[in-house]
Length: 200
Image (cartoon, rainbow, N blue to C red; front, side):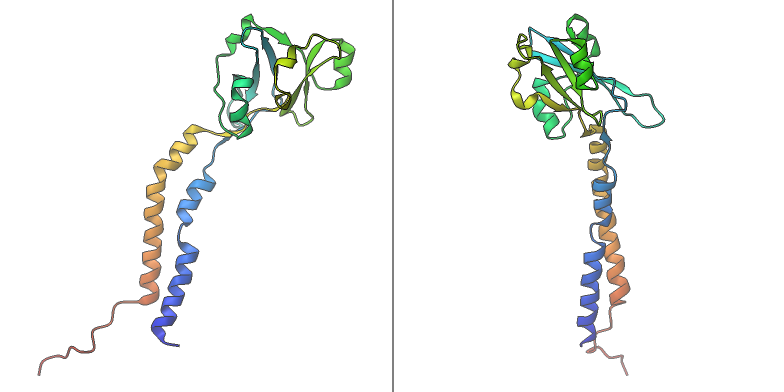
């Protein structure tokens, strides 16, 4: 096989292996996902005027920080949360004028408490379900059936996304440099044209 063709094949393989490594690292290795803390300290409040539920929980901020208390409205953020997008958070003090809905870890505890309406916490601690007793005034009936079972927010933070966007041009430049170095190492310095001769 012609040596130039062989070098080209080696270069092509090298480009395929090296190209995009830095850029991929930025977008895959720097995702900052915000998730609920455990325990979540879930609290649920009902608003008759908004026909919605205010959800309050603790968000994990890393082992070196205390959890952050978060609150959001369930109905207006249902689409964002189902697509792992950040919900629109509101001040926790909005709960001060609302009716608290009791939260239980087991259905048996909820039954024994004889509450007409309650929230059942899922076994993993991240999910919860809105429940009401048969025959009770259907306060949850105003919520669509598919929203009655919920998961607390898990999303990529805007700060992490902004850093990824800022670093992308640097990562792309690094990838180009790597490919250039690989090409120089494989192909070597350009040879002198054979048609040129030294003078007598």
